[in-house]
Image (tube, rainbow, N blue to C red; front, side):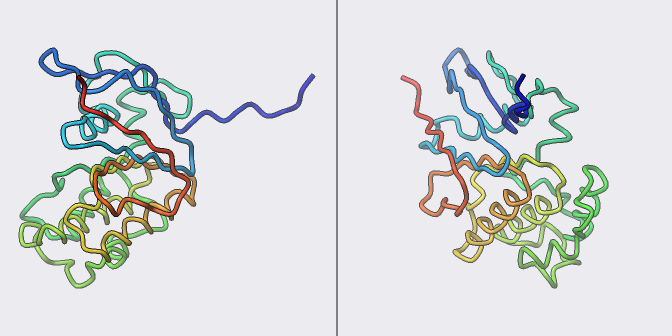
Length: 214
Protein backbone atom coordinates (compact mmCIF):
# COMPACT_ATOMS: atom_id res chain seq x y z
CA UNK A 1 0.00 0.00 0.00
CA UNK A 2 1.55 3.30 -1.11
CA UNK A 3 2.15 6.11 1.38
CA UNK A 4 2.71 8.64 -1.39
CA UNK A 5 0.84 11.91 -0.73
CA UNK A 6 -2.16 12.70 -2.87
CA UNK A 7 -1.35 15.02 -5.79
CA UNK A 8 -1.98 18.69 -5.13
CA UNK A 9 -4.62 20.08 -7.51
CA UNK A 10 -3.83 23.23 -9.52
CA UNK A 11 -4.77 26.51 -7.91
CA UNK A 12 -6.93 27.13 -10.99
CA UNK A 13 -8.00 24.67 -13.69
CA UNK A 14 -10.33 25.23 -16.65
CA UNK A 15 -11.75 22.56 -18.94
CA UNK A 16 -13.71 23.04 -22.14
CA UNK A 17 -14.25 26.74 -21.44
CA UNK A 18 -16.20 28.52 -24.21
CA UNK A 19 -17.70 31.97 -24.50
CA UNK A 20 -19.68 33.59 -27.30
CA UNK A 21 -21.31 36.95 -27.83
CA UNK A 22 -24.27 37.50 -30.15
CA UNK A 23 -23.85 33.93 -31.42
CA UNK A 24 -20.23 34.62 -32.41
CA UNK A 25 -17.47 32.65 -30.66
CA UNK A 26 -15.06 34.77 -28.64
CA UNK A 27 -12.86 31.93 -27.41
CA UNK A 28 -12.86 28.22 -26.74
CA UNK A 29 -12.87 25.50 -26.01
CA UNK A 30 -9.96 26.22 -23.66
CA UNK A 31 -8.17 23.82 -21.32
CA UNK A 32 -5.49 25.21 -19.02
CA UNK A 33 -4.23 25.21 -15.45
CA UNK A 34 -2.00 27.26 -13.21
CA UNK A 35 -0.32 25.95 -10.07
CA UNK A 36 0.57 27.75 -6.87
CA UNK A 37 3.87 29.54 -7.43
CA UNK A 38 3.23 29.89 -11.15
CA UNK A 39 2.07 32.54 -13.62
CA UNK A 40 -0.03 32.02 -16.74
CA UNK A 41 0.70 34.62 -19.41
CA UNK A 42 -2.35 35.09 -21.67
CA UNK A 43 -1.34 36.57 -25.01
CA UNK A 44 -3.37 37.61 -28.02
CA UNK A 45 -4.20 40.48 -30.32
CA UNK A 46 -6.91 42.99 -29.48
CA UNK A 47 -10.26 41.26 -29.79
CA UNK A 48 -8.86 37.79 -29.11
CA UNK A 49 -10.81 37.49 -25.84
CA UNK A 50 -8.16 38.12 -23.17
CA UNK A 51 -10.26 40.51 -21.09
CA UNK A 52 -13.37 38.38 -21.59
CA UNK A 53 -11.53 35.30 -20.34
CA UNK A 54 -10.47 37.02 -17.12
CA UNK A 55 -13.99 38.36 -16.58
CA UNK A 56 -15.37 34.83 -16.98
CA UNK A 57 -12.85 33.48 -14.47
CA UNK A 58 -13.70 36.30 -12.05
CA UNK A 59 -17.41 35.45 -12.31
CA UNK A 60 -18.37 38.72 -14.02
CA UNK A 61 -19.46 36.89 -17.18
CA UNK A 62 -20.98 33.43 -17.57
CA UNK A 63 -19.29 30.94 -19.86
CA UNK A 64 -21.41 29.10 -22.43
CA UNK A 65 -19.83 25.77 -21.50
CA UNK A 66 -16.95 24.45 -19.46
CA UNK A 67 -15.82 24.05 -15.88
CA UNK A 68 -13.55 26.09 -13.63
CA UNK A 69 -12.07 24.67 -10.42
CA UNK A 70 -10.08 26.40 -7.70
CA UNK A 71 -7.88 24.06 -5.66
CA UNK A 72 -9.88 21.13 -6.97
CA UNK A 73 -13.30 22.55 -6.05
CA UNK A 74 -15.91 23.78 -8.52
CA UNK A 75 -16.09 27.55 -8.42
CA UNK A 76 -19.04 29.49 -7.13
CA UNK A 77 -19.56 33.04 -5.94
CA UNK A 78 -18.40 32.37 -2.37
CA UNK A 79 -15.24 30.53 -3.45
CA UNK A 80 -14.32 33.18 -6.00
CA UNK A 81 -14.74 35.93 -3.39
CA UNK A 82 -12.25 34.15 -1.10
CA UNK A 83 -9.71 33.23 -3.77
CA UNK A 84 -9.62 35.81 -6.58
CA UNK A 85 -8.34 39.38 -6.78
CA UNK A 86 -9.17 40.99 -10.15
CA UNK A 87 -7.32 43.96 -11.64
CA UNK A 88 -9.28 45.25 -14.63
CA UNK A 89 -8.87 48.14 -17.05
CA UNK A 90 -10.94 50.57 -14.98
CA UNK A 91 -9.89 51.71 -11.49
CA UNK A 92 -12.37 50.47 -8.89
CA UNK A 93 -12.20 53.57 -6.73
CA UNK A 94 -14.50 56.26 -5.39
CA UNK A 95 -13.39 59.47 -7.10
CA UNK A 96 -14.08 61.74 -4.12
CA UNK A 97 -12.24 59.63 -1.57
CA UNK A 98 -8.51 60.03 -1.04
CA UNK A 99 -6.02 57.34 -2.00
CA UNK A 100 -5.75 56.18 1.61
CA UNK A 101 -9.50 56.34 2.21
CA UNK A 102 -10.10 54.18 -0.86
CA UNK A 103 -7.66 51.54 0.34
CA UNK A 104 -9.16 51.51 3.84
CA UNK A 105 -12.65 51.19 2.37
CA UNK A 106 -11.64 48.28 0.10
CA UNK A 107 -9.80 46.52 2.92
CA UNK A 108 -13.01 46.77 4.93
CA UNK A 109 -14.89 45.07 2.10
CA UNK A 110 -12.40 42.41 1.05
CA UNK A 111 -9.95 42.08 3.92
CA UNK A 112 -6.18 42.47 3.73
CA UNK A 113 -3.01 40.57 4.43
CA UNK A 114 -2.42 40.75 8.15
CA UNK A 115 1.18 41.92 7.83
CA UNK A 116 0.44 44.70 5.30
CA UNK A 117 -1.14 48.09 5.86
CA UNK A 118 -2.57 50.67 3.44
CA UNK A 119 0.08 53.30 4.19
CA UNK A 120 2.79 50.73 3.55
CA UNK A 121 1.11 49.66 0.30
CA UNK A 122 1.08 53.24 -1.00
CA UNK A 123 4.80 53.54 -0.30
CA UNK A 124 5.45 50.17 -1.99
CA UNK A 125 3.88 51.35 -5.27
CA UNK A 126 5.51 54.79 -5.22
CA UNK A 127 2.57 56.83 -3.90
CA UNK A 128 4.02 57.92 -0.57
CA UNK A 129 2.90 61.50 -0.07
CA UNK A 130 -0.36 60.99 -1.97
CA UNK A 131 -2.31 59.59 0.97
CA UNK A 132 -4.69 62.57 1.09
CA UNK A 133 -4.95 63.11 -2.69
CA UNK A 134 -8.42 62.48 -4.11
CA UNK A 135 -8.57 59.57 -6.54
CA UNK A 136 -9.98 61.82 -9.29
CA UNK A 137 -6.91 64.05 -9.04
CA UNK A 138 -4.47 61.21 -9.80
CA UNK A 139 -2.97 60.71 -13.26
CA UNK A 140 -3.68 57.52 -15.23
CA UNK A 141 -0.35 56.06 -14.14
CA UNK A 142 -0.97 56.97 -10.50
CA UNK A 143 -4.42 55.39 -10.62
CA UNK A 144 -2.83 52.20 -11.92
CA UNK A 145 -0.36 52.34 -9.03
CA UNK A 146 -3.25 52.80 -6.60
CA UNK A 147 -4.88 49.70 -8.11
CA UNK A 148 -1.61 47.85 -7.58
CA UNK A 149 -1.58 48.98 -3.94
CA UNK A 150 -5.06 47.49 -3.50
CA UNK A 151 -3.80 44.25 -5.06
CA UNK A 152 -0.74 44.22 -2.78
CA UNK A 153 -3.04 44.34 0.24
CA UNK A 154 -5.34 41.57 -0.99
CA UNK A 155 -5.25 38.23 0.86
CA UNK A 156 -6.48 36.38 -2.23
CA UNK A 157 -4.13 33.68 -3.60
CA UNK A 158 -5.14 34.04 -7.26
CA UNK A 159 -4.48 37.30 -9.10
CA UNK A 160 -6.22 38.03 -12.42
CA UNK A 161 -4.30 40.92 -14.00
CA UNK A 162 -5.72 42.46 -17.17
CA UNK A 163 -2.99 44.45 -18.97
CA UNK A 164 -1.28 45.43 -15.69
CA UNK A 165 1.54 47.17 -17.59
CA UNK A 166 -0.77 49.70 -19.27
CA UNK A 167 -0.18 53.38 -18.35
CA UNK A 168 3.08 52.53 -16.54
CA UNK A 169 6.63 53.64 -17.27
CA UNK A 170 9.60 51.26 -17.13
CA UNK A 171 9.87 51.69 -13.36
CA UNK A 172 6.18 50.80 -13.03
CA UNK A 173 6.61 47.75 -15.25
CA UNK A 174 9.44 46.54 -13.03
CA UNK A 175 7.21 47.17 -10.00
CA UNK A 176 4.51 44.87 -11.44
CA UNK A 177 7.09 42.15 -12.09
CA UNK A 178 8.46 42.41 -8.54
CA UNK A 179 4.94 42.22 -7.11
CA UNK A 180 4.09 39.16 -9.18
CA UNK A 181 7.33 37.47 -8.20
CA UNK A 182 6.76 38.16 -4.49
CA UNK A 183 3.18 36.89 -4.73
CA UNK A 184 4.28 33.65 -6.35
CA UNK A 185 7.07 33.24 -3.80
CA UNK A 186 4.42 33.12 -1.06
CA UNK A 187 2.39 30.41 -2.82
CA UNK A 188 0.08 32.55 -4.92
CA UNK A 189 -0.59 32.37 -8.66
CA UNK A 190 -1.31 34.94 -11.34
CA UNK A 191 -2.96 35.13 -14.75
CA UNK A 192 -1.57 38.07 -16.70
CA UNK A 193 -2.95 39.30 -20.03
CA UNK A 194 -0.76 41.33 -22.37
CA UNK A 195 0.07 42.11 -25.95
CA UNK A 196 3.00 44.35 -24.99
CA UNK A 197 6.72 43.81 -25.03
CA UNK A 198 7.43 44.10 -21.30
CA UNK A 199 5.40 41.20 -19.96
CA UNK A 200 8.20 38.96 -18.73
CA UNK A 201 8.21 38.60 -14.96
CA UNK A 202 11.11 36.33 -13.92
CA UNK A 203 8.89 33.57 -12.56
CA UNK A 204 7.80 30.07 -13.53
CA UNK A 205 5.44 30.80 -16.39
CA UNK A 206 3.08 28.96 -18.70
CA UNK A 207 1.63 30.63 -21.76
CA UNK A 208 -1.85 30.61 -23.28
CA UNK A 209 -2.23 32.20 -26.70
CA UNK A 210 -5.70 33.26 -27.79
CA UNK A 211 -6.49 33.73 -31.47
CA UNK A 212 -9.40 35.46 -33.13
CA UNK A 213 -12.03 32.82 -34.01
CA UNK A 214 -12.49 32.18 -37.70
